[in-house]
Image 1 (cartoon, helix red, strand yellow):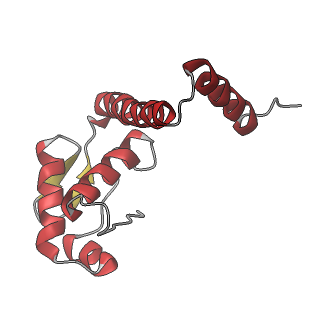
Image 2: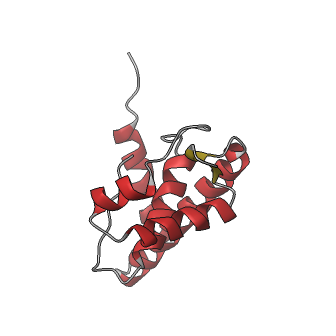
Length: 129
């Protein structure tokens, strides 16, 4: 599990962990039943206080993204599928909002933005031969 944190954007570190784990689950990169690193292990990898990771895991548990198994660790919830679809839509909505806001600041018309999105889609998904 790759988590990257930054201290430059003003988002609390625990929330960065929560958001990234939600994204990994929604994207299918963390599967239902998959074990997350222990609090101590992730804290050591990220060079942060273990309490920060514990807080993130607690938030994820409250959201139903993960479950704690007493003495066995923290795992992606088996009920992650509906959350995954909802979370994917939420993440894409946030990114679309950011793109549209940035385009508006650059005085770019909606049809230009849509053309750019379609162009990028074609570039990323070339026809198969």
